[in-house]
Amino acid sequence: MQYANLFLAGLFQAAILFLVACGLQLIFGVQKVVNLACGSFYALGAFFAITAVGLLHQWQMPMIFLVPALVLSGVLVGTVGAPLELLLRPVYRRDPSYQLLLTFGLLLMFQDVFRFFWGAAPRSMDSSLYGIYGTIDISGLQIPVYNFLVIGASILIAMILGLSLKRTRIGRIVRATAENRNMTEALGVNSSKVFTMVFTLGCILGTVGGALVIPTSAASMTMAAELVVEAFAVVVIGGLGSMAGAAVGAIIVGLMRAFAVSLAPEVEILSIYLVVVVVLLIRPVGLFGRSAS
Amino acid sequence: MLNVSELTVDIQGSRILRGISLEVRAGELVCLLGRNGAGKTTTFRSLMGYLRPVSGRISWEDKDLARLSTWQIAQLGIGFSPEESEVYADLTVEENIELPTWTRTCGRPAAERISEAYRIFPKLERYRKRGGAELSGGERKMVSIARALALDAELLLLDEPFEGLSPAIIPLVAEGVAAIRQSGKAIVMAESNLHHVPDYIDKLVVIERGEIIYTGSLSGALGDVEVMKIIAGAVDAEPQT
Image (cartoon, rainbow over all chains, first blue to last red; front, side, top):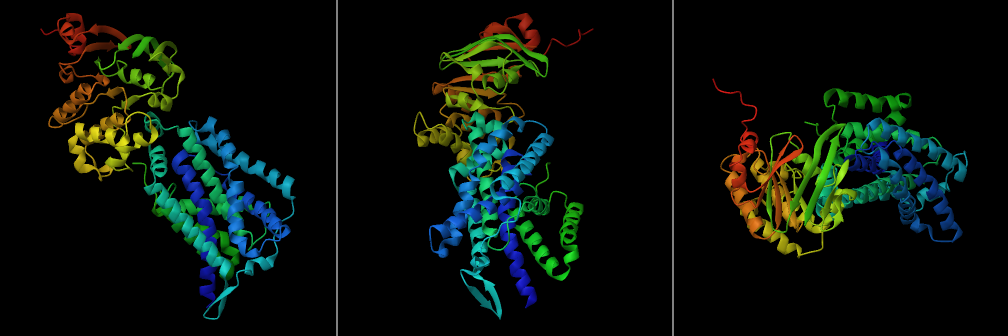
């Protein structure tokens, strides 16, 4: 029974990780930028969600709207990606090290932004909100409905994203731009607009992930850096640029972490990196990655 | 329609185009003939805004193209089929051809443009649902030209449309080029092989080491010994003893 509980906790972690990794994959797939600032967007979503839930309380809105409010707050604050994308434009066609330095700079700058607006101390919302939707009894285990809502929301977002990329005109233009930006421009596509849209969407996925995690844990200054480590583990395991890889990688990392925290907390991070090392040794492009050739 | 005047282009500090001038009128088929490395692709890449000229002017219906981005040039109605075809492997043939009808919505209705592309390359009709990665070199070339056509372009830049194609496919592509020309669109076709130059071209422009060395009719070039030395590949040949 303990394992079933850990399994569900791992899936919850995976759902959150998937959203952030999905944003990372999307930005890399189209813009070829490894966005180290993805953790900052996650943290920004978390901090902003605390403010949003505070407003919900202030306006005496029923807390049944918690999940929609968290998603909405994540979407709203994620639009900060649009102006931030302008900062990346000078480095798109330069060596990837410039992109890494720039996005790492953003990560550091966001630390001060969080300190300025929310203070240095960890912030959390009323812990009773986690159980606002009640619990489900599964063979004697009381699992918060909130966990299922987040897992469901993550699956829904993945399906909408996948279908949009596959079936809609804008999705096809995004895929074409990802494959060959120069050719797409020769077909009349303003790739700068596509890049702004994709970067903003990538940010929104991160901020929504951060907003959804906040009923279960506090928002803190260190959460951005911690998430970057996990998101990159997901990406390396799944394969850079692959959405399916992000899903599988997130499940592996989420489950590994949940089981390690409970069974062997001293090797929590080590266990994740053991998987990363094994994948890199056996299949360096990741489980779903495509080799350059 | 298109006027290139004294165009000079450098790539990584090396002078590739040295003051070339070129004029294309509406409905004309112009062939830019030159050996590999002569500057044909650089000319096309400059016309499409991928390269910024050092000096000179490129004007399209009195608009200065040298100041515009590639996508803006495409929006003006200049279609480009690159030498490597650059068909999207991740999209189907159908999606490849339809894409420019989503991005350039002015001009004729999308359905008309798409049906024209399939009418000119009927072989593609059978491969509509096939992925770009599953096509042969000749099929990719046809998709690339059909896609540029679907932009509803008034001028098509075709970079080496017959390069690397099997002898069985070349007539199909040549028929397509002839049909596009008959539809009244202007075409500038880059070619390195004299035998692939259609005899119905309106103008031949020969480029050598970044300079235009001949502009005139195909028959005129065939009668010019100096030009023939270059375009027939005889310039580097050692005298026979």
